[in-house]
Length: 222
Image 1: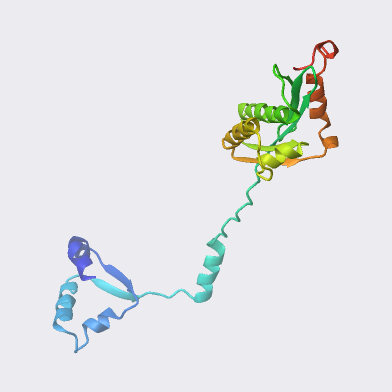
Image 2 (image 1 turned 90 degrees about the vertical axis):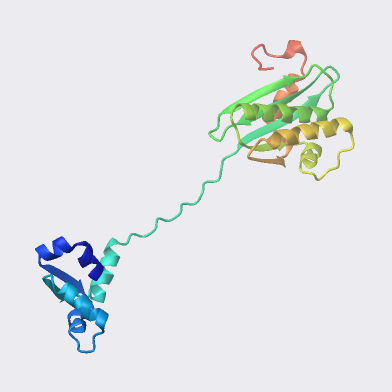
């Protein structure tokens, strides 16, 4: 109070000042037992027209009602939506004449990309299956897919990708390393083995890819 009076002396001397306070300053200043410093402050403040008024306490219920009215509840945190995956279904096929694979890539909204891949080299069924995975993952990355669920009816390939089956052949290890390198670029990846009857479209495309050229429809995407 004294500091304020000193800094704002022109205002204190030119106007009547009302001070709302919950301490009995006037009584303290006029008490016979007041110390010398308090007496000095009382004289200094006495130069101004200062009226001390008690500060009215807010009733507990009024304060509670005010807080209840103007306190807004924290918004509930919405559950995070799980990212939806693109579905990659593949199947490999090998005949005496040709090797190939079929793949179907389906977006979370149901858009489908279907391909029949005819290789210019001979490959085993498992190698053809890996080739389908490699091409399918490249395609998924090209369309901006970050979450992929691969489905295949090859127990061996699925088991090797999951680390459940050992890889004994060098060529298969190279395929597996390639797939793992592609998977590392995705935010999430999983692979499951499905029954052959649930992989009909990819199986059909793989058979189409290895069919004799004369038996292939001209509009087939090979």
